[in-house]
View 1 (cartoon, helix red, strand yellow):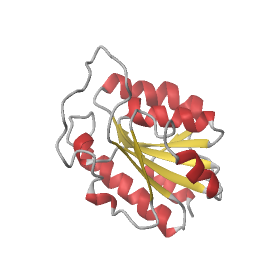
View 2 (cartoon, one colour):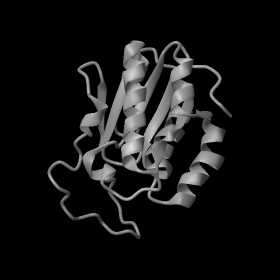
View 3 (tube, helix red, strand yellow):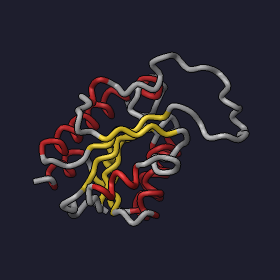
Length: 183
């Protein structure tokens, strides 16, 4: 369902737009995703709305079939991409797992600011973005996903999130449409 409105206290949450993740192969060029995320961030800042920049610096404990992830990433792997133009007013959240809510202070930071709606963008659609959107929905936030500001390493997983999961959690629309709703 296209986005119909943005609450007066809506926050933008950009997931894992960091050097290490942005360097991975994805369905859509990461440069385009980062550019749209940066446009959203600039628009939210211009309207005095919270911008949350999330990065991942670890992984949740436990074995998976994909391995243990014991390798050490490059030193700048978790650094946010400079195109986001991080500002002192931005909220930064470092997570150790897929979702941005579990084990972080994100919910508290949003509630302190009276946020009732969250707009998501970032990488990877079916992992960090979907996990965070699910948690936002479970925490009672209105959820909107900028469909052209997300991408994934797997095309089928990306499509499934966009077509099947996100419509169950809230509304979806393009970067331009979301910026237009800001007024």
